[in-house]
Amino acid sequence: VRDDRHEIQLDVLITVKAYPQPSKTYGECVCVAGIRLDTVPAEWIRLYPVDFRGLPRRHQFHKYDVVRLRARRRAKGPRPESYTPILDSIRVVEHLRPEDGWSARRPYVEPLRVGSMCELQRLEREQGTSLGVFRPAQIVDLRVRRVDDAWDDGRQAVLDQQSLLAARPMRALQKIPYEFRFEYFCADASCTGHMQMLIDWELGENYRKTAAPGRSEEERVQLVREKWLHTVCGTRRDVHFFAGNQQAHPQSFLILGAFWPPKRKVAVATPALFE
Ligand SMILES: [Zn+2]
Image (tube, helix red, strand yellow):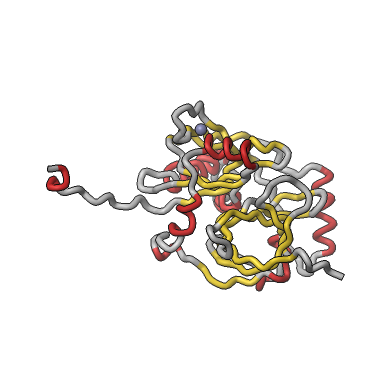
């Protein structure tokens, strides 16, 4: 019998979906985060575990969907924003589309923006904050490191077992054979620089989609770097990073994704204003 006493109903604007990872406890899992719309003021929430690919299609959601669901506060772990979602309660109720020029999304994201990554790390020390959004001040590079292209035996065993039990056949979860890390400075006056791994699902999909006959691995990696450095973080974009920390290493944040609306045109002040 399900204990419903601590279950609450939430409305969440989904802003983050990380690339799926096999967890030895939960099987294939996606870290999902977003903004609660049922609280005043709006606040961050992390939903975990979500076996996203295993969800029936009617429960699957996209970034910038508003979903209604039931969830429980996670008893384990100190991160205040973490909830366990009741997966079969998830309903998509709305989608904020990019065709609206991102303008529909700004009013939700901007009130939660903090000054910098260094500030987010201070907030983590002071009150355990584990999710945030901020503008990186200066992006230096997207560094790439080759890693194993296979899951370790334990994780592969978890995936194999899950696949046997799955309600419908599913493509094997591909391990992305690279780690991508943003090297950047945040806007804090005393920032000494950050080097943080990007774990957005979109990054994994970007890499997977670069596969083409005759294209080398170097070319594929270069295409992914160009996409993130020159499109997402390009000069025409007002790029923000979504960041979240690791439960075992609270001061260690990862880049979960980007919010990258076009820069707003700055109105040219008329000279009269300065007279
Ligand atoms: Zn910093």
